[in-house]
Image (cartoon, rainbow, N blue to C red; front, top):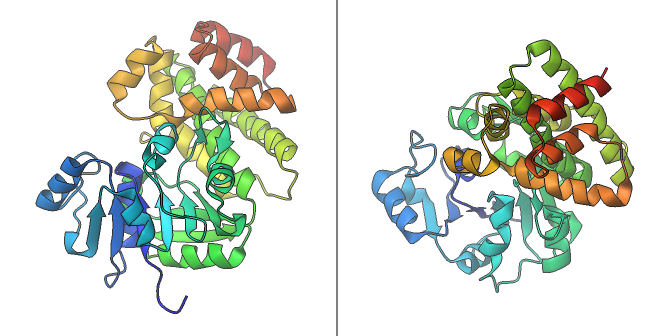
Length: 332
């Protein structure tokens, strides 16, 4: 591209807000920003910040073209960064009629399209004809809250086209965001789903008052389980200890900002799934990811005791104390 490509952020939550902030660190840049609700856009323009998420982050709204029309956002942009919860992706796309096949799509969605059991890049490729060279995954240990506070964070971009990956990575690099690129799209995306499942497990154990010693063993077993699954579904050379895999797992399992850990902690303390979801008022992607990966694994038959334990607790209504005791007896 002769000039800097136009970026659109798709979504109105905390991660979308953090990504928009990162995009706008370059003072000469403007972005398009799609949000579903006109009322949220109106409040944003009036207040200068997202009225619902990361409210301390101020924006120069003159550099933002807001729209509640997803077709307008797509048509007027070269790069589309999707940062919506995975359960709501299809509803956001219901009104889409514009052609996305020649756009560069960046998935910042760490989840699976639930009733399709497809990772996001696969869904855009199959349903919207976007070539894999134009499909990127954004992953790594980068909580929205810390990025918004400009704390040093690391992002990994996965794409079959390293040229496109480097181009987008350079656009989002700044003094507090360090970037790297790899070509392991499927592995990175599945890892982003699984780390949420394991963070729920870590939260459940925390809620049950298991200590740090057990948490260390749990996460050690989790990265081994993740590696078994990734090597089965996509036999590609990868280093599971890199930040896009292990780093993201660690921060999601331990951080106070982790929605999935928080959700798991509530389950471990005795909350029902519905009560925990209502009280959080935010989406814990791992709840949906647990069921999707469990169903996907019916094809691959990978040994995944941690996934199975979380599934039994969330969907089988097995006592967390009983299920975690059985799980702990199988770990080393």
